[in-house]
Length: 133
Image (cartoon, rainbow, N blue to C red):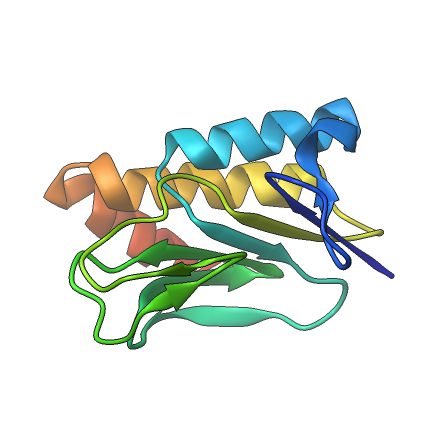
């Protein structure tokens, strides 16, 4: 089973204000990192960096993180359509499997932050450590 959290209640999304404290803390950490969508899967694992028409994705294990591109080639749509050139600032959607391993998620966020803000050598070290892990 999975839970989908967002900024407000809809037919398919539960407001983040109604989530457990650990999930709310995760939401605010992701928001701080500039993430728009995060998915924590139950089983499937991915290890790649992707780029699409509207988002760049970082996938490590069961965690996927998506950031809106600065110049998306298609309009975005969460609850209401967002025109080209406009941003959906901050977190919009957090999908969490009921068997979430919070330690795995926090380690992935640490790695993601290193990729965003770390020096060239920090990023290189991270890639080699993941390659031989």
